[in-house]
Amino acid sequence: MTTKEKLLLLVLACVNFTHIVDFMILMPLGPQLMTIFNIKPYQFGIVVSAYGFAAAVSGFTLAFFADKFDRKNLLLMAYIGFVAGTFACALSPSYEWLIAARIISGIFGGLIGSQVLSIVADKFSYERRASAMSIIMTAFSVASVVGVPGGLYLANMFNWHAPFYSVGGLGIIVIGLIFFFVPQVNEHLVTKQPKRNPFAVITDILKTPNQLWALALSTVIMLGHFSIIPYIAPTLVSNIGYSQDDIYLIYLIGGALTIFSAPIVGKLADRKGKYPVFVTFALLSMIPIWLITNLIPTPVYVVLIISGFFFIFTNGRIIPTQAMVSSVVTPQQRGGFMAINSSVQLLAQAIATSIGGAIIVQEESGYMSHYDWVGYYAMFMLFISIFIAKKVKAVS
Figure 1 (cartoon, one colour):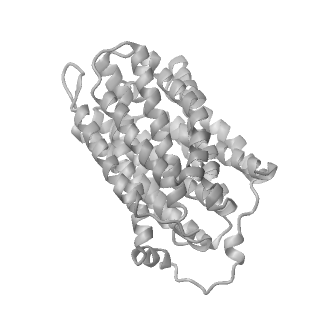
Figure 2 (cartoon, rainbow, N blue to C red):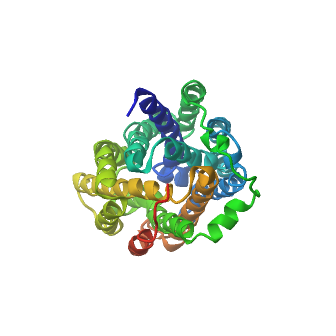
């Protein structure tokens, strides 16, 4: 890997870092926000899913013109809007205003993920792609180690607005990094090809089973994954008696572990095959999912061990998934397809969050019932994803 390639991946990881922290910080803030705004679990689910629904719509819209522009320019435009939305979250004075601000963040945030993955897929061949994706995925790890604990510290020291001010401030710096260090990504524009109908991205997907299977894989994984993720912190506090002040430890330890595990998974996927590695980690991730959603009052170190494995195994199946999904189209189609894929993922995340919130019932004592049902549902979705992933074939 050349110095320029490493620098590109570093900047894209910074983009993902701020993007992920902005999204993730809401979940551990759940207990605080539910108390401050006097809202129920399903209402908190609306705050989380508002971002996903808005991002899904904007991502779908992007698909019709993503491959007509330089990917760097699109990323820069989307990221500037995202930073503005983050500051809007920081300034929100009420529950309703926070929902509106999350919609603004989602509109622009929905454009970011697909462009980052498209740039990586354009610049790295399939044989090296999982390793490159694993570096991008370390942004999730660093966000968990530094971003989320730091955000929670700021929220505890000041108020819940503070983490969003911090992310917005970092975002201004990242705008400069994108401008100066991300090269123009326009190879897909110089290739001679017939002028395509704007809706060709949709017709291509509908008549190509391989692309449909890839979208199905993204959908099913997110339907399971995000039914449990937003409610880990609230249930640990309400059901297990876990201290709100210790929530950051889950993200700190889990993120630190994946900093080391992600590059290993990427190399394994490139060497041994994306599908076998995906299946292995999909099956392994069912273990901590069951444990987390069926926890009884237990020592803190046990919770941290379980959540640590949850982070490692979840990260382990996402890396090969991204490599597989990005490979089902040619570079000339990739921007539009990845925008649709991002839209589908975000919509699935929003639906999954709503499903989890609808299943969980908060009793008068504060105990949140039926989280175990959500866990069984998530495990079933993962099981289905194993069979869907086998249908996905690389073409570029």
